[in-house]
Image (cartoon, rainbow, N blue to C red):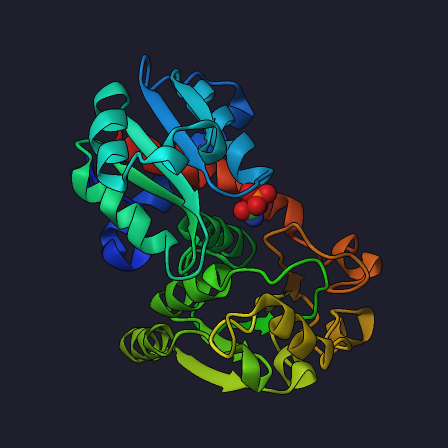
Length: 326
Ligand code: CP
């Protein structure tokens, strides 16, 4: 167990050691148990988290805000459009100034080619931890919550279990690459057999795929890339079909939407679920495009883990905040 995490940023779990991540999971389970028992755990009394959003949110906003209150502190909801950022406040100024008012800065900035660098620029200027609430490359707290959910369902040693991280069709908007990129690199570290299933136009960043491959080699699992939607489900223990944009093929969102339209039959339905293992679980970070990305029957069905997954956002975020913001 690692006990020297005060002051650390969480921009991607790739920058945390296995021991450090296991500490996060241990603390998350402990805080989840405490909340279930009604045991107070005001570990961050009088601390303040600034939450800066450049993009909308349901789960991330509510879970960070609730988490800070449960830890005895306070969270400020700040939309970038209501700040002076558009009038010149730089990332350095945000880091320097908000870092002097608050005890942590959490940021969601998902613009392609902008978000990750912005968060790193704020972190470089900040004296307090910076937490990535989703950028263009990573969604660390989603991946941590996803792993906590997998541990709950399959035990703390998921080696030998197959996770199918798959693209699925959606029509609402071209979603960031951050969820699949974060999960394939995290699940391979825990020795899972990870499949990345996607049409050829929906590649992830090559360095992320290389990292997943290297993680799998070190941990004794596997990493493979498939382009057949049904094959991805076959024999899997965890299926995670969700949409993302054809961002590495085109940065034109209209063209990305047109390309996605070629694969509108990539929907998670009960026929596909029957290809997976009998005890397989269905996961999705939400929001999902219902009856486009996944049928109601699957997302509301007995194999769906989406509500536990969403709840676990709260517990992993509280764990990281309690460990880093003291
Ligand atoms: N999964 C997730 O990050 O949800 P929100 O976009 O609602 O925060």
